[in-house]
Amino acid sequence: MKICPNCSSQNQIKSGVIKGRQRYKCKDCNYNFTVEKMGKKIDDYYVNKALQLYLEGLTYREIERILGISHVSVMNWVKKYKIKRPYNNKYHPTYKILNHTELANYFSNINELKGAGVVVTELGDKFMLIKWERFRD
Image 1 (cartoon, rainbow, N blue to C red):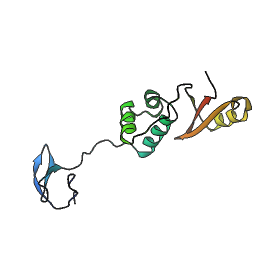
Image 2 (cartoon, one colour; image 1 turned 135 degrees about the vertical axis):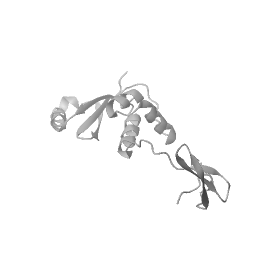
Image 3 (cartoon, rainbow, N blue to C red; image 1 turned 120 degrees about the vertical axis):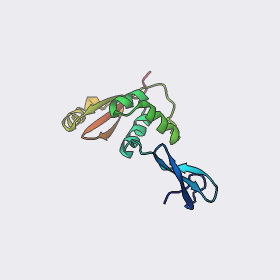
Image 4 (cartoon, one colour; image 1 turned 180 degrees about the vertical axis):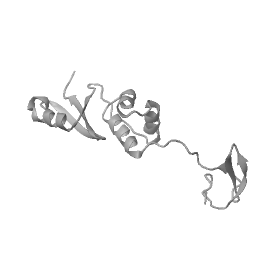
């Protein structure tokens, strides 16, 4: 059963076809509505990754290049979920995309890790390393 988007009632009748889609009329509030759009849905995994990367300080365009998802979609998700990034203009993170072997080599070198914060996140079969220097002017 379809649910009325206006009053959440399940009490409706068919009310014709518009542009090839079935139209319904709610008996409780007299609201006319059609069925849901059958659009392209992006997997929740990518939504979570995009928001995580946004919180780590990457720009919308950088996220677009990394995940292959439109920067406009990322902006819409940030607005939808009311994500607020902590404001700090003293640094901008750098990122690298590495496979398992490259990541192991990176962590084996202690000089790469001194004086920096590092976050590692999974991206499919690869890993993304986000790094920013502390006290950078």
